Length: 334
Image (cartoon, rainbow, N blue to C red; front, side, top):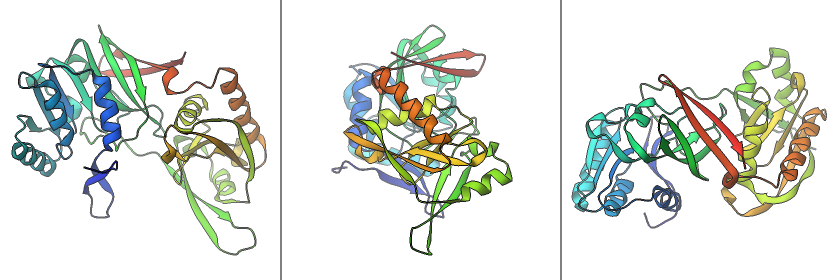
């Protein structure tokens, strides 16, 4: 764990990662916002390698209790073995983390190390009043994430901090979440016969007719313009993902660029992602294909963003309300 890099801990037969240990930099940011102290009771959902549970136990001390859950039997066993070998008194449970762990409740802190589009009511109910819940929350159907820390206030959860980061989806029988639809799009390279493929993803693709999808399948060379301001890529991407109408919003796998589809699939406009640059300010570019309707719409959104002072994750407030077992996510910009 000496490198600031993701470590894949399990993959499926096709080599697709199922579980990983996150970058230490992201772990540190999340731990800092949990405001841990000696004697606290902590529930971790997603045991991974056990490394984060060891850090949690160190911070809550001998008097504190840490329980970590994983739905994968093999991962739970390996985490248990690693924690025992390191001398960390952590309870490791093989169970569906989306249901929490009622036997150990109430918890002062709950931290989820996999992304989820919903917050099960069990997590709120197992959190002590005033306690903190931290998770990578998928804010949109296309999978845009914000690592949010919430405080329990009665029956509601109110955000107190948001940091950048992306996590694999939570595997839980009770969630039944599906991956967003995708569309492979081909770009004709200028002066060459070879076609290169990229993939778009987002629920907006399901709204396209067969004819409209065909219009997007082959794109000409893009028109390239400036997004108009130097900014932290992740913050701009988060803002656009929450402000572009859901029936137009798409992302690009290649760099997690964010943008929108033109009416009837006649165009496409994207702000390049380059999310690997994290929170460093950089000059973003707009790539536009087809007719200019989507391009004009995207630049209008960028104009509004600049007029509001370029809000990003630090200006984002998220609130979770519950109606029975269902959670409802709302957001606003300060």
